[in-house]
Amino acid sequence: MTLLDSAIEASKLRLRPIIMTSLAFIVGLIPLMRAVGPSAIGNRSIGTGAAGGMVLGVILGVFIIPVLYVAFQYLHEKNQW
Image (cartoon, rainbow, N blue to C red; front, side, top):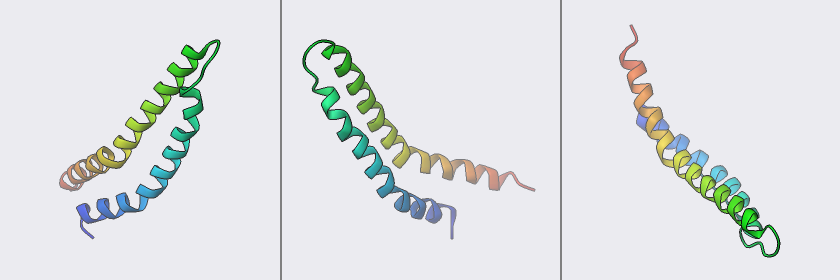
């Protein structure tokens, strides 16, 4: 398998577990983001920040990490003697 083909295949295999766990965590934060009453502002801030961070982590995990793998593995293979 070529380097690019292996990265694409690994990304396909990792997509479902990443999406499922991340989505479950984000859905679990919804009550925290919709809090009312005393200290609701703090709960909303924590919930929104955690959900936003999780969305950013999913984007990085699904798109950026495979690209970095291909780039660094190519450089590693190119510089071996």
